[in-house]
Length: 272
Ligand SMILES: NC(=O)c1ccc[n+]([C@@H]2O[C@H](COP(=O)([O-])OP(=O)(O)OC[C@H]3O[C@@H](n4cnc5c(N)ncnc54)[C@H](OP(=O)(O)O)[C@@H]3O)[C@@H](O)[C@H]2O)c1
View 1 (tube, protein in one colour):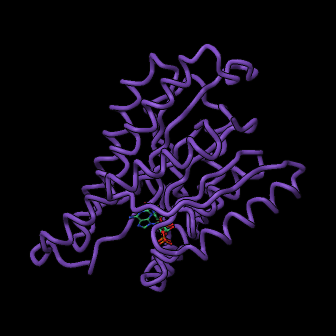
View 2 (spheres, protein in one colour; view 1 turned 90 degrees about the horizontal axis):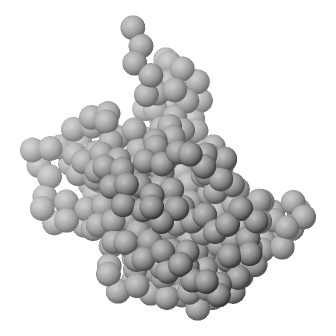
């Protein structure tokens, strides 16, 4: 079993997931870097994580694992891979997600695209968290486990990466908005169900973050940000989200669960 705590991050080959992996590496987490199709990106994330950890005086492992979170067999494989490689799981970060396919107007949206988005952005985190939670509960209960010797105890956590789109309407991304809104309830459900097992659950809600996902709408949002869309007038970075996740991972919020951490430059603040 790994001596370091272990984080499984879905969709960590690029963007926000990669930013989360790099920040967790710096504080000594071993990492399972999941990806859907971009193996080169995942390998690059893993290599970089080991390097930034080393620069911070930590020795970590980072393994890559292909898996489409929208498919049940792939979700099983991700957990099995983690069990076989490092035999423990301290943090699941449900980050993988896709934007609305084709960004079609509400009146033109197709069922096929709706089903695909819901499989990846909603069903994926729901059932991957179910698998992870069952394993975390087993690890918590295992008397022989070396986990019992961890100072402060084994304190596993689950994080859902939602979005400001969970409450801010975009009529050309209805499926995306609804899936992200549902992650807020998913956080509360798992937080309530898992509290007695000592597993804290959080929603991390990013605003506009510079990544491949937002690259096609960069110019539109450059203008809106300059005009004061959020009180902090800049794009967010994957590192911004990674640092919020790391605060949770380091157990700096031990008496909080079912909580939403906004990483959005203050976008959520209603203003007159
Ligand atoms: N960027 C933003 O402004 C923003 C704001 C709020 C919330 N978010 C959310 O943050 C998360 C990450 O967004 P991002 O901007 O980093 O996106 P991104 O740059 O498009 O990266 C998406 C990541 O998810 C992976 N992925 C896609 N479909 C997958 C699947 N079916 N199974 C497993 N992995 C899959 C990709 O893997 P491959 O490289 O292998 O394709 C990639 O690593 C998403 O849930 C997104 O909704 C983003």
